[in-house]
Image (cartoon, rainbow, N blue to C red; front, side, top):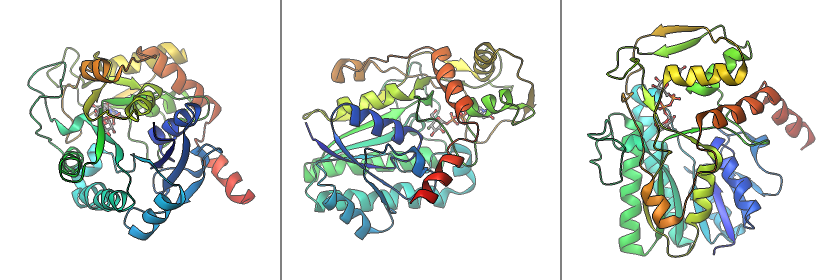
Length: 334
Ligand code: UFG
């Protein structure tokens, strides 16, 4: 088992939870993040922190060397479907070109284990549900395309250089731990936006598209608790594990069903307004995570939507401004 893990993007939502769980599992963890999306206050105080950018090969090399990394876990990316439809270049530069810097620096440092955050967006609208790993990969947005390109680079680095890799195609991450939750500077995700309405920080929740070919006309997604995603990363570090895995719960919920779950958990009505479809959104995405269960022994511990929404709600209530105040306090103390 690698003991020393360099987590790239460990100040972001999923990365910060993974850092917590890797530390709890006994790994020595170092975090590398450019803080463009992540938050310094989200980084577990047990982990040394390097502020650096994947565009800068030297800073990656330094972090790999000083952390004595035996494995790299890579979360850093731009991840918004909608934004990728207006700024595709940003996605190819950060997720592909800068990702390649990381892969090459990893090889140069002699590290031979790599775990990558991919996405179900690599598939595009699936021809059947639930989605298994062997479905055709035809992304319908630059975000999914950029992640697919990185997956392909990984496979070649595995074949040619002997890199042992695991890539997880997450479906929709949700939920929080006591310390770490979802705070994007510009929030576009459904659950945090609904919870902002419950916290009275927004007047209503927008529903993007009510004319999809689904029972209630809104998009269907498979939500997965962020700690269950993190646990998969802990398992992936086991020597000999390699491959591409879908991660979800195998249950789809529509936008309206998610809003209803938030109403149950928060105890009130969430006002909504209907808006046109958001470009790049596939109507229905539901995972089969059978391969991860069979090959990695992965079992989700928080599979229900209400558990995800409840933990998210607890975190948002205790962090009504996300990490904003905490980051200011930490910056002053430094
Ligand atoms: N939605 C709304 N209103 C909102 C926000 C979202 O109706 O205020 C809808 C979206 O149109 C979509 C669904 O809710 O139909 C889920 O949207 P999110 O923005 O929460 O999540 P996405 O499915 O677009 O994308 C997320 C991650 C991606 C990942 C993908 C996998 O951002 O990185 O899940 O499905 F690839």
